[in-house]
Image: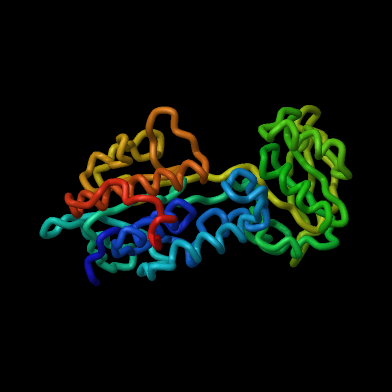
Length: 326
């Protein structure tokens, strides 16, 4: 494989903006992502949810934001290596070589790690038949709202995702019940109040203990977490929103300084390994804010420092993009 100026690990919003900005600065780019498509969590976890804190958009569906960021991030024709995990790192003749899990060797002069929270997997309820009924009534996210059209839906969880989907699917499902094992929620107060004042049934102090149905889900057994009494609850679908587990995976073994599953960086967003940077949710520094809006700024800054590392004569600040055609 050819040696590129910059390899971006992660095809989510921060990685895509890093790719765009590196292209703007005349750098050759390669994007590696373990998912089969670009967009990161925007497309993999919550494509139908609205994002409200992205500059320029009063609100925008995550899948629409992903589509536009993909268009922006690929306009300078970066090389795409998708459905591949960056496994090991070595140094050869003054540059880095990333070897993927399938054995591809990808040489690069600099690296930006924009892997979000790392490889993520949904937290499961942990009851029998959960895997068996996956996609047949059990879901861990919503890719298409139409899947739940006219269905009696139960949403398990007490965080933002659970409450957001309860509100978002009101115009789609025939009935919605929100099931949570206690009366304390981690969702925004405004979302909690909206759900309480909506048609959503609040099943508080309950946990799902059994799944019922032959080929598809037809109902669940709920256990009252205080009295331990059980009841049958008929439903067509259950969305489990009780969190995700994340792991940096093989990147942990690259010799980077790791702090609480995040990569430590300095004011340049550079790691302890020269020429390797980290941005977005994956990086750690004092007073870190985990937002797309701040992450894309980190990506642009890291790209500029990577550029000056490759070309010491290059300016750190390239000027405003609006001045390019003037």
